[in-house]
Each structure stands twice: as C-alpha cells, then as structure tokens.
Length: 353
Image 1: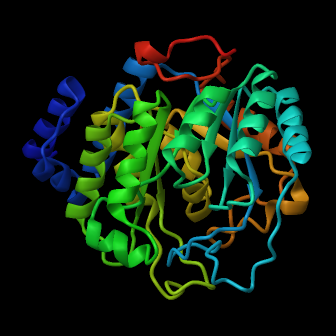
Image 2: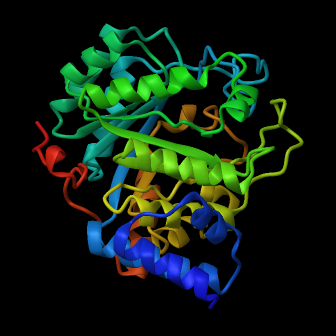
C-alpha cells in the first residue's frame, strides 16, 4: 500500500480528523487502497457505535413540492408525475403497521408541500409519539417557528441534506433556493435540540473531488448526528436527464470517510446506493454504515415518490422488505438494534417518550 495513504488512514482511525488534501488523496486512490479504507471505516464503526444496525421505517406521504431543483423528479415543473397526498389517518396507519413489524423509528418525508401546515404536522408527531417510537422529520426548509413547534410536539430528529457544500454548484442545482438559507435552517435545528441529519449527493454534474472533500468537512463542522450520502441518479423528467450517474465506488468511499471523520454519527446504507448497485446496502454496512431506512409507504403511493428513476424495490410490501433486511443482516453477522437508535452522544441518550 502507498505509504501516504497508509499514514492518512492510520491518522483517521486514531484521531478522526483529516485535512482537505488528505481527504482528496483518499478519494482519488484506487484498489487495493479502497479495501484498506473500507476496513478502517468498519473498524471505527465497530469501535464507536457497535455492530447493531438501526432500522428506520420511512413514510413518503406527499410527492407535491414547491421547489424546482434541477435533479429531482418531484420538482414542481414535472408535469408527467402523478401527484398524491396521504391523509393524517393514512400516515398514522402506515406507522402503526410499521411498529407491528418492529420499527422503532418512523421517518416522515415529503416534498416541500405547504398543504400540511405546522399544526397538522405537530398533531401527527404527537400522535406517533404515543406509539413509543422516535420520530424523524424530513420536510425541507421551513420557518424557525415551525421547527420549534414540531420539536415541542416531540419530533426527535430532522433530516435536511445540504446536497453540495459548493455554493455555486448549489445555486445551479437549486434555482429557487439559497445555500445560506439551507445552512441557516441547519443552524436552527441544532439550536432547537434536534438530532440533526444532513448529507450530500455523489457524482453531481460539475462536482470535483475538492467539492466532495468540502462536503465531508462541512458534515464534520456541523457535527451531525446523521449523514446521508448517496449517488446522484439522473431522472428523465429533469434538466439533468442526460447527465452521468454517480458511482457506487465513490459513494462507498464517501461513506467510509464520513465514518472516519464522524465516529459517533449514524450513517445509512442508502436506497439510492442500492439502486445503482444491488449489493450496495451490504457493501455500505461493511464500510462504516450502521443504519438502513426501509420504505413502509403504502404500495398504492410508492411508485409515485420518484426523486430518481428505478428506485430500488419500490413495489415491495413492508413485510417483505423487513424479511429480506433480516436475511441480509444475518448473512453479515450483524444484529438488528432493539432500541430507537438515538445518537450515542450523551445529550441524546434519553428514553423515547
């Protein structure tokens, strides 16, 4: 192995810090260095968060969105997409079914759909908390007052990906968004006491290794409790339809580096990674990841939540997904976590109420 790469990985394992130049060097290295990176990340994962894999049940309850992000199939300009909204009762029933399958965390995700006002979401959170689960929200950019209301209602976590830490690329991808506003929202979430999740896409058009390094350094600076990293997958009904997709290899390297830099963070083996590589989830779990989010949205809506095409296993019933997940973990020798999977940081070690 290249001695420099060996030194970089040794430093990361022991100190959990790397310079931008060191991150870039690892991103640009090739096998067998990749294997050494994945082993190092797996070691840090085992050392700091253990072998248990945390299972999250995600309900994608609306595919309406006010935004026009250039990469996303939910963008408001996409007139080819059949839109849907689930009622609060339907959302609750989906969560109830997920709890019966053993899920201890429910993730509520939608496009930025202001049809659901702050009070409606707060009432739903309070209702879900009575099921004894942790609740994660992923509803995009909202006001400080809305975030505060939902936190007061009992929401434990909030996922708001920064997508790219390069302000110029961010603006190109988000013509009606603003990078500073996104960071401001993440700051509010931290102030309000959420367990904060962010993350990025890998392989975006115009993205460089330097930009990817900045993504990781931003996640380190934010000290996130969760970092979601997945490949860019072009959608045919977007301006980026002809762009090249991100690769599983580079995504796995980013996941592994995120584990080295954020030893206590929860890192999901993402659905997008499983879409570009059928074994992507298992590979990620061997490269630093410790979370899997499985879709528990009712099947009649599932195929219409198409951020990217050919979404992995969009037609799979929740019970089938859970069985296959258990089988995969058994093959890896990894147990399913029995707790709600709060951040291992001391300030978040509260019981689910």
